[in-house]
Amino acid sequence: MKVCLVTGITGTLGSELTETLKSNDYFVIGLSRKIWVNADACITCDFTNLSTNDLKESINNVISNLKEINQIDFVHCAGYYEKERKFDSEFNESLCEKTFSINVFSFYKIVNILTEICEKYKVKSSVVAVSSNLTIKKNTLTAPYISSKIALEGMVQSFAQTYGSLDMRFNCVCPGMFASNMNEYNVPEQFINNTPLKRLGKVDDIIDSIMFLLSDKSNCITANKLVVDGGGSNGY
Ligand SMILES: NC(=O)c1ccc[n+]([C@@H]2O[C@H](COP(=O)([O-])OP(=O)(O)OC[C@H]3O[C@@H](n4cnc5c(N)ncnc54)[C@H](OP(=O)(O)O)[C@@H]3O)[C@@H](O)[C@H]2O)c1
Image (tube, rainbow, N blue to C red; front, side):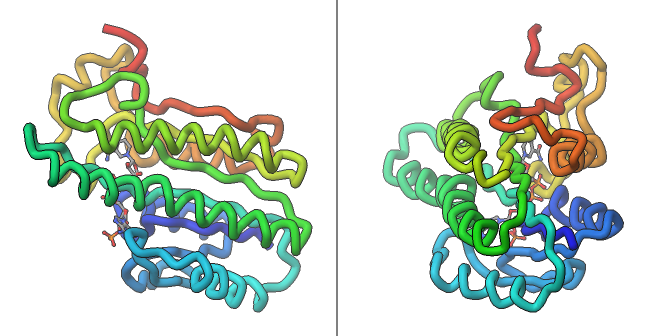
């Protein structure tokens, strides 16, 4: 049996990814603030206040009831994006904390739980963190978001180095802007015109890249990132 932990399952990308994983015979365990019936199992947790021990117990409870597991993957879709206000240092501090808790620290905690479980069950794993092409081509007033995604990419590379010997692979997918809850389904025309392909990645394009990185077709690929943005971050 293939199992996948997915964060952000209520979001635009996470909810469609959940459907794709299920149609590819995955048992999907959602980690979410809200119960989400589309997943096979859902563990409720808020990433701004995440207890590693409680989460470990909940994940272990679900997994111990499953039979013949041969891989446990993880896709970190959850993300928080909010622009800074200029000259408001107090506000920015809390924004940094919130952004890093959701985008980075939750990933760190879940990976640490996952490595223990993979070692216990002697199963392989592919982990995909959803980053952003803003780690390559920056915009304004987004220091908390961009630095959190750069930290996330650094973590992915470090985990790839540390846990490769457990047959665990770690990669990132970096989407360009795509229509979602995060931007109220508003993608300005200028972003599309600035890409060599004259189109941005759609949710399905991003899901294809994630599914590739989870699959055996990428079984020699780790510590890498796939940029899915129609080439938008390549140049002007
Ligand atoms: N949309 C874009 O243009 C774009 C571009 C580049 C990269 N990305 C990245 O792509 C990923 C998916 O984005 P999306 O557009 O699908 O965003 P979305 O629809 O806004 O989904 C974000 C998800 O994160 C979850 N989340 C937020 N705060 C949380 C918290 N405190 N605890 C637990 N979960 C929390 C949300 O859960 P709730 O339902 O509970 O709020 C939601 O499921 C993100 O990592 C984002 O940074 C997006």
